[in-house]
Image (tube, rainbow, N blue to C red; front, side):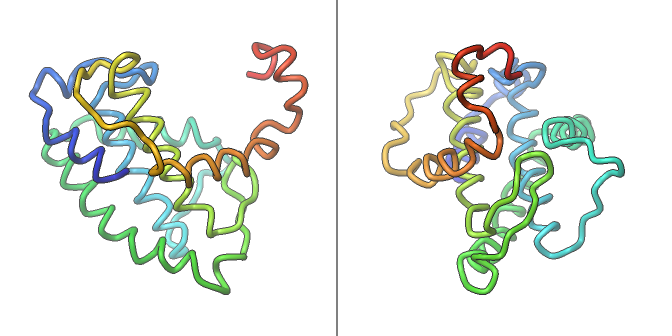
Length: 182
């Protein structure tokens, strides 16, 4: 999915980068910047090289802080950063699939506690969501011919299913009164 985001980025002109995305308050550039920032954060966390704010601020607010810090970068810098972070992430993500790390757990801010093997699936989910719902039409601003997600999103579905009860501890209430769960 990272390669898909990089491919979309390579197709953008100045107008495309500055368009409002399907992610409220974010431009296309912000969404692509978020991808690189998120990879960077998780790789640093796995390596024990990140300090979280005290008190904790939650993942959505943290995402906003990280994107805000990159707003002065130009599109080429955003793409270069995403590409470099992706290359850094592959060996780290591979190590999370092997024991003893794979079955080790970590609390992921306000998202719940997960086995580390789930982290690459989380990226598949996040990037697939941003690509297909925040960047590409009909919800996003970019009218590009793009193949369907198909089997590439199987890890995203696995992640979502594993995380429902962690992110939504009372799903019955949410299904009965969706607006009350937010």
